[in-house]
Amino acid sequence: MKELVTYIVTRLVDHPDDVEVSEISGERTTVFELRVNDEDLGKVIGRGGKTAKAIRTVLGAASVSAERRVLLEIVN
Image (cartoon, rainbow, N blue to C red; front, side, top):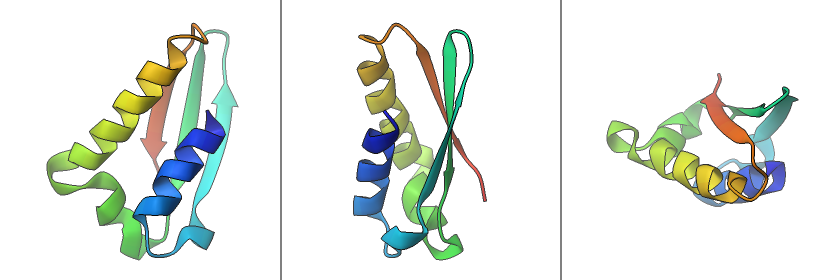
């Protein structure tokens, strides 16, 4: 899943080398913390949060087979 987040976000941003994804695993939940360059923050969030919501939807669909709850936090 971490690779999926990294793949999607690096294709969206202008500074792909600055993309950092850290994974925090709990008992039934996994939280991915995403850090990007300040200039790319708007591209990852999107107008009205639509891009971030789309990324979260893809993660949710991918997590069904893993039977885990997956959360994405955009941290800067």
